[in-house]
Length: 307
Image (cartoon, rainbow, N blue to C red; front, side):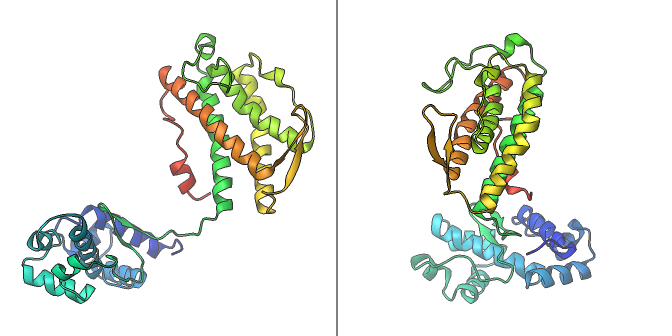
């Protein structure tokens, strides 16, 4: 379902519907008003987009919820009928039987898929929301690129916050760490390694050397300067590797002593794995220092947003 004015209206309708499922006094006029349309245009837009009129759409979602609750709760048929907006056991049973081919009692004993076929593919999603089909197909390649984009963006944001802190705070030891990874970590050392990791792998891919001494006592300003070059370069490298289907291709990392052979896919997985650990330590240290707007740096919403 690609984004158009009609689908935007439909998305608003779905949001309103989700918030009013238990308001059985809500009318079609009220729903139309909530999405800022006349009732006539509201009915036409939703029916054209969803393949069913708004109130029929709502009744179907409520029946799906009732069917789900038949499975997972001990509520009586009458209780479920009331929750679905029906005034009597009989009316609910007739509607349920038309939709599922069996009475509620029979369906509870021999349940099947609780989603009712619908052109829009929007269904009740347990425990209490609606599931809307994605507007675009996200591939594994898209996901890798988005995760790398998020990583570089977050490191940039972490550095901008760290720039407000004193040297004492930057150099305070981080007490929670993983043995064998980054001895005696501090906020400064973790930030420098996050930037250095990108620069190091850019160098390895290009067959160049990397000077680790630059990370010793590096200033935040210096890190930001390096990230401005290393971040976009790493993103570009990953995009090229993914687009060209070279994740299983190997390269020689001459920075290792002795040199080692890695796959590009393994390298990307390595970067994101260890970077996630370091970012978490940095986010926690920033929170301890009173800077909490980035939270834990969770990529969940970032990855879900269109690029």
